[in-house]
Length: 146
Image 1 (cartoon, rainbow, N blue to C red):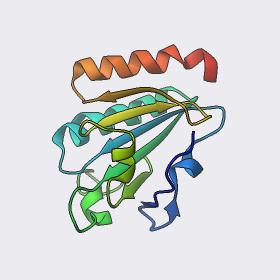
Image 2 (cartoon, rainbow, N blue to C red):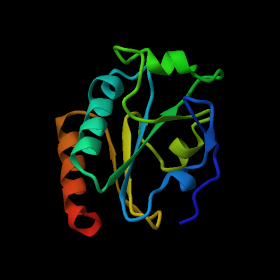
Image 3 (cartoon, one colour):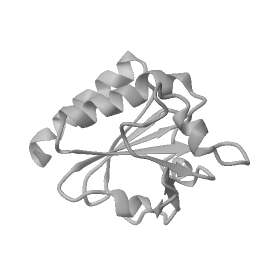
């Protein structure tokens, strides 16, 4: 699959593309979120971190999508973390191009991809039902990537 060459900026101001972040021999989990989304910061990010810690075959890419004219600053993105540090890499996209490309329904939105950049599943939400679907999907592919 050919992914858009949208520029993602990490919190160190280094630039990447999603293609460069997809890891070989891993199940790739992409989380689209926004700092102003309480479900994202209260449930989705903690779940993404937990899954990342529990499953060594899972590569996590967290993308902060911006829906306003001015990009979110590093300080704004980190403001949701108690110690102003993120335990996981966060990438910012300015014009929600990848968010639109994956036809996200809102934030948080999860995309599971294999290392061939093929979409396996997408999920919207952070409530218990969405969390359960995501965990089942991760477990479904565990044998292929572990």
